[in-house]
Image (cartoon, rainbow over the protein chains, first blue to last red):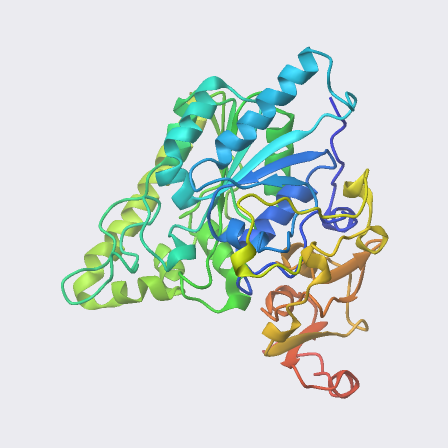
Length: 318
Length: 130
């Protein structure tokens, strides 16, 4: 196996040569490219990448340009996972037959997809890849909405968010369904490594990506991606909003090893109230009206309950 | 490359580099043989309303701006912050926001602002209250 890239601190990390290029068409302040940069810079290995349809795909492969300095393929909305799984299966077959042209190069296989392409549309495909046990990594850029097509709700959209297909107004407080617990579902597939990451915690992210790439088998990474356009905050606040999300425990950072053992990898020194996170975003603005107070209370209670559950699971080691 | 919308190919393959390449992960941008279909050769400078200006007098090379820049527009070489890539910067302002120095080493100015003038009028160190 190839040697792991040494990244002790941010100064050392900053000597990385990016394999993702500028002049892509992502919105100013988009967290997608911050995440992609952190993932790609975590390794010096050759990469074979795929992307499902979504913001990342449409913005980085606008004919006649590509923003990727590695082998990259896009096919359809649902099959970023199977595209890369197919490449991985072919690589294995050629290797077994001794027909690889450069047998000393061992590429890593990574697929990117938005939450729409992963939680909803491509779910069956991802499930298939994980069941077959391909040696690949699947990274979800989870911005909790179909941001590319104008902000429709997805099954990742949390309760109370106003989206174009679940708008808040006189009769509704917006999205009514709870966010799907994708990490638990993927851990239940028996995946050797499942983790949640956030771009503002770059060190945690790099550690998990490196661990994931070194792991044999299908690895699932859920990356929180703050969306300046659909979450409705100013572009320069992307990192501040991400900090609020991780410190309010709305996005707890943890990993699940072999589908069982859960480790919490980030414990905020000062846990901030969930309403600070919600209040910073336009999509939750209506929750601060008096008639929607019950949604706010429910939010805080649910986040507390989930955190309690994670801690207990970590303690029990199951 | 000069095809219009109607001449789109059903499947297209774009090469990021001219000729065969090896070890791109360890080759810096200035040494890469970029092809004309790599978006590195394009520019989004006209997206900007505001631009970041870098004042190296206050910079501590913490690299927060480098890691959090979404557009690979903070140029860092040998662990030192060198400057801003104005061809690819979209002016989001994250770099100025995450800059921890006092006064900040990166500040947002109007796109037409003259760099020397901005540096001459750089704000003083903010005193902590009380």
